[in-house]
Amino acid sequence: MRATDLLGRQQDPIVAIATAAGRGAVGIVRASGRDLSALIAAVCGRSLPPRQATLLPFLGEAGEVLDRGLALHFPAPHSYTGEDVLELQAHGGPVLLQLLLARCLIALRLVHPGARLAEPGEFTQRAFLNDKLDLAQAEAVADLIDAGTEAAARSAARSLAGAFSTEVRALAERIVRLRTLVEATLDFPEEEIDFLEKAGARQQLAAIVQAVHAALAHARQGALLRDGLHVVLAGQPNVGKSSLLNALAGAELAIVTPIPGTTRDRLRETIQIEGVPLHVIDTAGLRGEAETADEIERIGIARSWQAIGEADAVIFLHDLTRLADAAYLHGDEAIARRLQTLPAAAARLDVYNKLDAEGAAAVPAAGLALSARTGEGLEALRRALLAQAGWLAQPEGTVIARARHVQALQRVREHLAAAEGHAAARDSALDLLAEELRLAHQSLGEITGEFTSEDLLGSIFSNFCIGK
Image 1 (cartoon, helix red, strand yellow):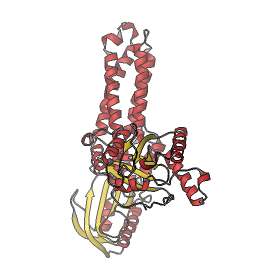
Image 2 (cartoon, one colour; image 1 turned 135 degrees about the vertical axis):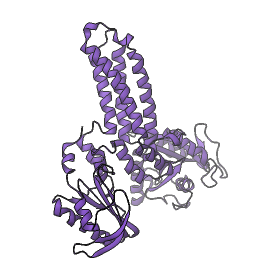
Image 3 (tube, helix red, strand yellow; image 1 turned 120 degrees about the vertical axis):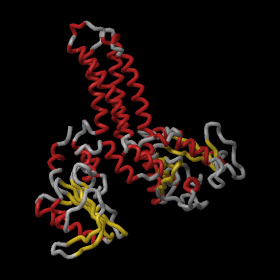
Image 4 (spheres, one colour; image 1 turned 60 degrees about the vertical axis):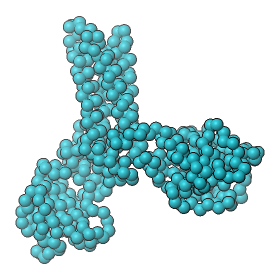
C-alpha cells in the first residue's frame, strides 16, 4: 500500500548536490526523473552511453564551459531510483557546484516545468516507491551513512543487502500459509475437518512464535548497535565520576580536582565496547539543595537528575575511602531512595571507586570495585555494561535495526500469543484466530513498507541528507 500523495510528487524531476557541503576534490550533482534526455543534451552536449563514465565539458546556458568532469547516465529502470539518473562528477568547489545545480534546474524546467530541488532523502524515497528497495533497506542507507562504529557500519550494510528483510519476509510467508489454512477452513465448514489437529496448525503456530522470538532478539541487538546505550555517571561530589569518564574514554575530557563541585554541567562522550556505542554522561555531584549555596551548582544538580531520568543505565558511583563516614552514607542513601522513585527507573549498577587508595574499605558483595586512576576493574565494568544492555557477542551476524522494527515485532509476538490462545481453546474460534494472524502479518509488513502510513514515510525520509 503506497501513499498516494508521494506517488504524485514522484512525477517531478529532481536535482541536488549529492556530496557533503564544503570544498572537496570531487563534487557530485545528481538528477532523477522519467526522461532526462533534454538535460543530458543541454549540459553534456551529446548523448551518453548507459552506465559508462564519460569525460567531457559541462556546458552553461550560453554554451560556455563551466567545468570538465565525468558524466554517468543510468537509464530507467536500471538505476538507484528506478528512474533515469544523471550524475555529474565535477571539481568540488561550492560555487561551481551551485552553478551546475542551477544549470541543471534551468535545463530541466524547459521540458518539465515542475522540476525542483530534491528534498532530504527523496532519491532513496523514490527507490522505495519504485520497488528498488523495501523500507527496511531504505532506512539502512541512512544508518550506513550515520554509523558511528565499524560494527554498526557492517550491520547496516547487511541490512541494506536485504538480510533483515529476508528474515522478515520468511516469517510473513509462514504466517500467510497458516492464514490460508485457517481461512480455507472458515470458508468450507461443511468439510468437518478437524483443522487444528489434521493440518498441524498448532505446531506451525508454535514454530512461527519461536522464529519471531529469534527475530526480535536479532532486532534488539541491531537497535542497540544503531542507537547505543545512554549511561549516566551519578554520585556525590568527589567520588571520581569525571575520573571514570576519562578512564573509559581513554582521554582527559573532564577536569579533575579534589575540590567538590568541579563538574557543574553534563559532559557527554561516546565510547565503543565491542562495537556497541555507549553514550556516557558525567554529571554534577548530587547533594541536597540545602547543602550548597552556589546557584550554578544547584542548576547542575537539577540537570543531573534530568539526565538520570532519561538514561538507559545509571552507574551509581561510591567512594571506598568514605564508607565509614556517617554523613557520606546518609547522602548515598538519599540518592538511592530518589533513584527508586523515578518514573522510569533506569537499570542501576553500584560501582565502588578508589580501590587503590589508602584506607579503602572492603567492597560490598553486590557491587563492582575499580580504580579510575589505575584502570583496575574497568574491564569488569565494561562487561557489566554490555550485559546490562542485553548485548550478545555475535556482531558478525547482526543486522542494523530501529526502534520501530523492535516495536513491530513485539506487536507480532502479542498477536501470535493471542492466536495461540484461540487455537488452544476447546471450541476454537477460528474467526478470531484468523484475525490475530492477519494483524500479525500486517505488523510484519510495516517493517518492509507493505503496510505503512504516509506520516511514517515522511518522518523516515526527512531525516536523510539532501542528495541521498
